Length: 333
Image (cartoon, rainbow, N blue to C red):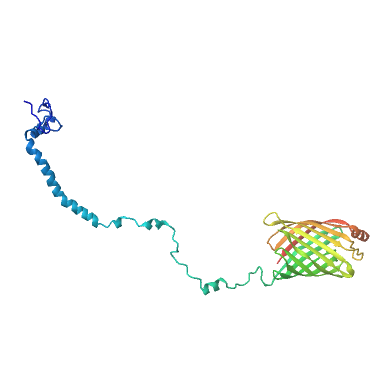
């Protein structure tokens, strides 16, 4: 007869044919098999059904004290140590106050800041001096050899100075032209001075004194300009415009073009000067600076007389226009 499940769990039909005991599933590893476990439950159904609830109740009683202890331990734990303060996110913000406080300014600090320093040599009252032999040269003239000079210098400060100028020419041992100027110069900018003073002519003709005033300075870098007006005896007037420019060819080689124009207000037969544009001189000199203070040079000049001045030159048997070879030296200290 086929075994049956207990009444409260049995089916309405037989369980079917049992597998052979030799098959491993027959030992109860597969549910609903006809193995030994199912047979044990079927044969001892009433006693085993009461044993399972008893085991569960016993396990619950054993585990209850442990669960209560665990809950009490969790309640006593400091959860604040695991939480981040609300302002922790602000730790990366830039500090509003310096970590090293700046000390307050003291009277000693103010005194050091406003200490009066001595004047700089560029704009102070120091007395300086300068002398320049711009042209000291021998010239090959039509009438023979000539010695020509153009000298200048000053003494004083950066704002006010005493200026000295002299130029002239000697031909075949005879002084043809000679003059000297003494001027006061006052700086009106970093590049320009106003000048005023006196000019004394020794040659040609009888000596003559002039009042002088004008400007001198640099129009652009290395372009020196002198513009001077003169008022002489008996209302005679004159003006002179001079310019020279240094062109640096190498570190030591300098090409210098020059120009000079002379004007007179009226004719002066005694000195051979006609009104208007009287004379001009253009030159080109190439110098080699052995040192910045000393430079020999060679060059050429072109002289020309105009208007009534040219007429006076012809009457004296002099040339109206002439080119000259020049050799000289330029120096300053």
